[in-house]
Length: 427
RNA sequence: GGAGAGAUGGCAGAGUGGCCGAAUGCGCAUCAUUGCUAAUGAUGUGUCCGGGUCAAACUGGACCGCGGGUUCGAAUCCCGCUCUCUCCGCCA
Image (tube, rainbow, N blue to C red):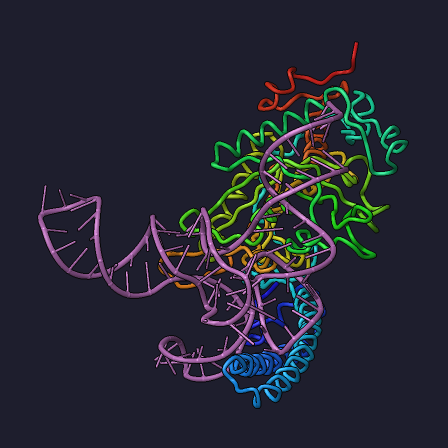
C-alpha cells in the first residue's frame, strides 16, 4: 500500500506508474474519498470535543441546568455515531481503492511486459550434451524419481510424490541452502504452512476470490501459504523494531501451496508448475532508506547467484519489467536457470525471484521502526528472495546433469547429503 | 476437550462510572552535583489520525487485548471474540 499523502501529493507520478505497470486505478476517487474522510474526521473531532465539554459540566451543574445538558449530550451522541459510521464507510471504500495501487517503481526498471525484462548477465556454460537431452519427466521416469500417478490419485492433477533419490535431492537442496544462509548471517526458521487471511493480504496476496492463487481453509480465516514470505513477513506484524537492530535477515523453510488457477495448458509438464512444493526463502527487514534496502536487494541476489553457481547450473539474471512486478515490488530480479529439456531445445525457466518491496508491505502489516535520533516511527522496508525452490531446482539439476545412459550426476555440493555421486537406474 | 485466572504505557504494577492518557516503581534521556565510575537530585519521557506551519511552535481527537452495547460521561458496568497462563484429560 502506498502512503495516502504521497498518492495525493504525487498524483501524476502515481498515475503514470500505474499505467507503466498495467494497472487501472481510480485516483480521482482516492483523492475525493480522502478529502471526504478528512472532513468527517474534523467534524467528528469537534463533536467529541463538545461532548467532553458538556459531560464534564454535568457533575458541577445545578439541578436546573442538568436536564438541558443531558439533553445536549444525547444529541451529540447521536451526531457522533452518525459521523463515525459515515467515516467507517468512507474509509472502507478508500482502502479498497488504495489497496489496488501498486508500489512505485525503481527508475531503472524496464517498461513493458514479460518479454521486456532486461538481462543483467549470463552465468555458466550451457552444456553441449552430444546427444538429445531429455526433459525431467522422462529422466525421472527412468530413474523412478517422481510418481505423478499417485499424486493424481491422492490429491489430483498438479500433485506428485518425490521418490528415492529425488527425496534425498530435495533434502540436500534444503540443507545446502540453509547452511549457506546461516553462514550469511540469516536467522533460520521453519514457519507455519497456514496463515491468517489478513497476513496474506498484508504481504499482497488475495486469499479469496475467483482468480485467487491461494487455497483457503473452509470456515476459518486461514489459508495455506504460497510462500514463506508470507509467514516471515507476517511474523513482525504490528511490531516496532529498533532501527539499530536492522537489517534483520530471516530464512524460512516451508511448503508452498498454489492453486495455479488458469495456468493449465502452458509449459506445465512435470513439476514445473505444481500445487505444492518446498522452498527456502529469504526475507529481510531494513531501515526505511533506499540505500539500505537496495544494498540488501543486491545481497539477496548475490546469494541466489552463489547458490546456483555452486550447484553448477547455468542461468541468466533478469531485471523484471514494470508489467511483471506484481503489486508490492519496487524492483524484482529473477534468476532463470537453463533447462535443457524445456520447450524445443531447452529454455530458461524461473528458479528464483528477489523483490525489494520498500515500505509497501510494511505499511499494510504495520511494521515500523524507531530510531533514537528521529521522533516517531517509520515503516521499515521489506525484501524477499528465493534461496531454493525445490521442484524447479530439481528440474534444472536433472536436466543439466543428465548423461547419455539416463543417469544423473549429483552436483558436487549436494553429495554429502544425497549420499552418492550419481543417480542411476536401479540394478 | 474440561475447569479456573488474566490481558493497563519500554517493563513491573495501581486504578471498579466524571477530578484518568492514566498513580507509583524500574528503565531511558537531558541537566546539576562529584577526581572517574557509582550514588543522589531536578526535569522530561508513547503511538496513531487530523488542523496548523516553508518547517517548527501550537492545537483538536483517538488509543487501558479486539469488537459491540448501556450512559450526558466507560480503563472501570454488560455482551461477544481473541490471546496468554495454571490445572486435568488426550496426543505425533
